[in-house]
Length: 375
Image (cartoon, rainbow, N blue to C red; front, side):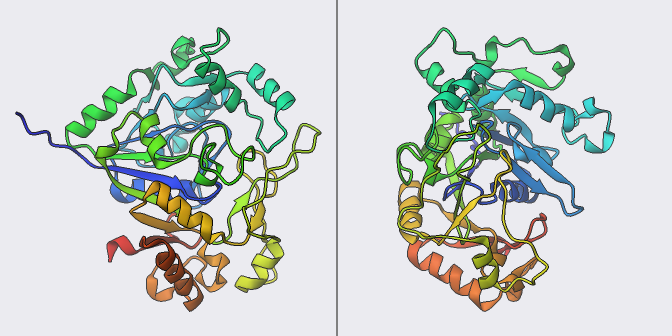
């Protein structure tokens, strides 16, 4: 039997309720490791942001964040749910189509998209606005997936859509499962980009119905992307010292609860600022990438973290927002510069999870990362 020269597969997933800085982590790994391909299962209810060292920001809701690595092949798997206007706007923004050559991250690359990826319509968004009161971005993702699962005549798949001719050079509809597995068999290295967060998982999340419309665990990620779990080498679980949930405020004029964080106490951003010792002129408080509403913030939930590790079995942990523990960590790039409070927190993470913390995000830019994998 001919020996298969298999490549490696790395997963990046969020270990909490989203907004842990997956975009930063994925972009960093993409530039560090230059994977042969990146594949995702993104939906338009979450955004992923990467900031280059020169301050330029890349934010995507559909395109893989690994677009920042110019040699990486980009794929969107059948587990995705796509809002066509958002996808087209992203391609225009990061290609020559917007007339700005400096923004041409795509270059000559095509986006390979599975024909069975769901397509989100305004009817899906309107139905969510009418139905859901348990915490949602109301982007239509859940309804689009439900119609796909029910084989509804109203369901739309990407393979059914007529793509405008201006995107002929950028979109290729194909079986991404075959593309990605052939690449792995030929020794290629693949980065799987996860979306949302484990604590929002519809089956394993904190508290139903205050969850998202699908599973967000590592097993579902590889399934969505058509890759066998036998091929996975590393799972990076991204976390933050103070987990968040989306705002209870909505744009549709109704009350909407996003839920609590198990037994963890909700605190204020002023409390986080006071604890870490940030200067008075530094503004604290985060807004979501998609809805632009202020995130709710909570104390660390160690029980949930241990549960996430047990279900997902990460091989490595990335801790972002280390400056929220001690502001002296802000923009640090070496372990020697880590304040003692950050080191103690990392020791506690490793003690409770038995998983090494190998990446430590300390600020917004790509360079603001302490990489213990290199040591």
